[in-house]
Image 1 (tube, rainbow, N blue to C red):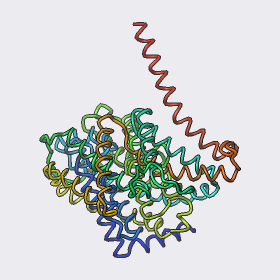
Image 2 (image 1 turned 180 degrees about the vertical axis):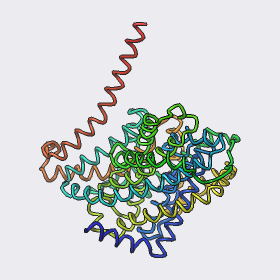
Image 3 (image 1 turned 45 degrees about the vertical axis):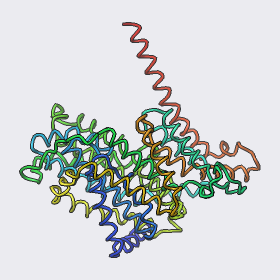
Image 4 (image 1 turned 30 degrees about the vertical axis):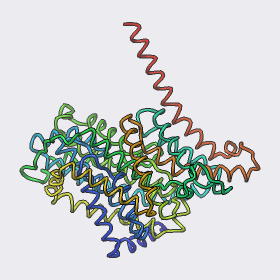
Length: 503
């Protein structure tokens, strides 16, 4: 009953005209951003971090959550009509969604994606409402040793999962950890790696790094890759509503996609890519007409889109309850919490319940807003694809530069922005994931603080990390996530060599 009462209090916060306005701004902006190819929710939230200082934290996070959900909705539009996934989670949608568009059924593909997103988002938000408080009760058992082990797990999972190569992920993580060392040591007051620059005594601002990697680096990479080539957009034709047969074939994939998306999104090694691929494979296996997959099967759009949106709610559960980011967007939202001097985790539910429950309640409201925005206005969103790419990308770079300067009104932040942006461009060229860098920058100093605190309490006895059951379990899971994929890749390579030798 406490959860229900807290949720009603959250609705009282979320339905104030001021917060409703920011929710509408978030979902509208998120949908627009999702439609535009090459721009995702992580980049958008990163861009808006410098300009949201004046907002109340609750309003800012209601807007950020709206952007996150909205971008998940909007990403299906560009995947279906342009065959250009704006987010990695929309890759699966493009397989059959674009095939439907080529057959003149793009409107039906967009409709099943929008309705499936609403169904999955609503069910997953209900799950978030009841599961997040349970995670908080577990987290209240944590001491410094457990928190250090949890942060090691977070650093490990983001590094191992977000990217194709463990070594590249580790390189990105180490870069972020190095950036986190810059500034004054909190315990000794000694300056570390400031190079004599007074502006660096407070450390490198997380916002500068986030905007540099996700806005500057990503935009430069997109420009270099696409070179503004012409793209064929399939226009919406005929009826924009689902037929009885379309409904019959869509409702079960919506529910199955939700069942896959939320729990996998909530796992430390979750995210949105894994459940969308699993949903596609599940629907193909259960379909009576598997030969249609790849040629415009509506189930192949309905299931993955539901999984995609359900995973977004799943990602918020460990972020709010444990301070554990499991996706690039969650890492940027963690940076946003730090911007306001707020540390997400179990204490957040007691210290700032208005923010937590107002945010959760706004997800219900945002889902309804998104359904109303996406079903009747699909044709309007398609028109955004006509924006000339040079205008779009130059606007992003200009906005990023101005935002970095307004943080502290000094040119050092602008110089850092472009240095880190160019490094981010190089990372994208070399296929090095950027999310581990952000997570390393944010969690590195916190992990160092908890590490020192645990050693102080144990009087220098390092075995404290292995004698506490929760701490030991988290470290074992982290090691497993690093070692198992490495062993599996080694075995696969050895089997491939043996097969080649037999031939």
